[in-house]
Length: 304
Image (cartoon, rainbow, N blue to C red; front, side, top):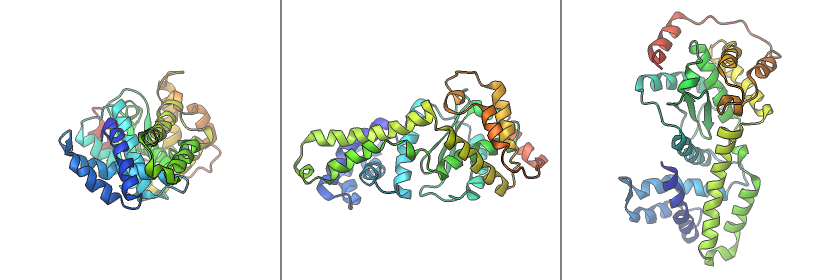
């Protein structure tokens, strides 16, 4: 879904919410279905997705539900794909999804509302992102740092850890959700004009912006990154991958990253700091990468 489509519908969706209430999103979708199509797809299709995203803002003072996470994640994913192009290589993407799905099954959040989805971005930047709800993106540049499947699994496990730990949702500023609740909860909103609708639309857009700014530009706190590394080690061990793949991968990235660069170096603690932090964990016996794993890795990603 294109970000501009999502945001342009947000005002219509809020209007529908005012007419039918937050507890009847199906009615909103039926109304918006009468608006025709956008880019060849019925507006109702976009409405079904976007209405859940706007409704999520109304309930943000509570824990996000799996459904809300999913639709927020879709909006974040649309923003990621507005910045990066996907890599059109079905074999490579299928392989990354197979590895990612196996890892997700051994996480503490093996299922999400919309399922886990993994996509390669056609960018030389060394980076990876995880949107709420299980959307994981990894760049071509990051894949080139991977010497084998253990290394790839280490990167994906780290991103799955961010999903499991709900780190992206922490980026939404509490002030935004408080303001949204104040608008939606007030009796006066039932008779308000377009100003309040515009404020709600902006709050939703800004909430997605909070996540994008943290994920892509600023990065998470060192504490959250270290926790994601530790969670990744647990996932790797449960799945049967060598947990040493993570510090090995970080050592390779240390060689390739440009200090002060705009990619992973900007949004994550220094690889050496993460390696040092990981060294405090009890190391398990190293697992030799089976020849079959290396063969399928080279077959799928050898030309990346």
